[in-house]
Amino acid sequence: MGLNIKLIIFDLDGTLIDAYKAIAVSFNFTMQKLNLPQQSFHTIKKSVGWGDEGLLKPFVEKENLKKALLIYRRHHKESLKTKSRLFPFAKKVLEYLKKKKYILSVASNRPRKFSDIVLKSLKIKKYFNYILCADQIKRLKPHPDIIYKIMKRFSVKKEATLYVGDMTVDVEAGKRAMVMTIAVLTGSSSKKDLIKAGPDLIFKDISGLLKIL
Image (cartoon, rainbow, N blue to C red; front, side, top):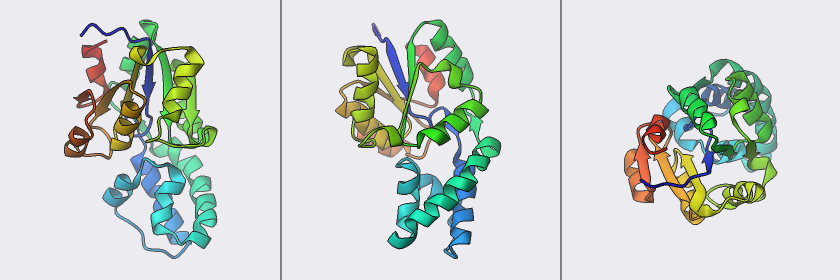
């Protein structure tokens, strides 16, 4: 394809890792503690992608949101360690890209503390040159700030940057940053919605990167 990519930025949940079970368990634990209705795995999965506050907000009254976040985060610190897994090929792809000297980064709407927990427990933190998360920036994806900040850190132009994510929010962020944007089908957005969002390419999973890099 004649690509001259230097920097590859990955979304985390739904792209590199499957933490949906960990999220669902912590979510319903929180609902139980607040005497609120528990939700199905499908409903919770569809609500992922806008950070933990964005996850809980539609289901919790405004005055209880702070309390809900405290309960969720305390529980999630542990559930992440036991109920998260890497998607197949994730480590193989990261090893290959690192060997090829690409600059690798994470751009996640998760808080940094929780991103670190899951990256360490799944033993992939070592592959990344930089990790940038929701509580380190003012505006979350789909705003492109998180991508701009990573590009600026490494002085890499948009033409040499590739962004990989699983949600329409990721595709929108990548397109607004005017970088090559790839969507994968391992997350919470449907193929139909991703096609509509208009990424440059759509792959079944991140192993598709090996076809172009």
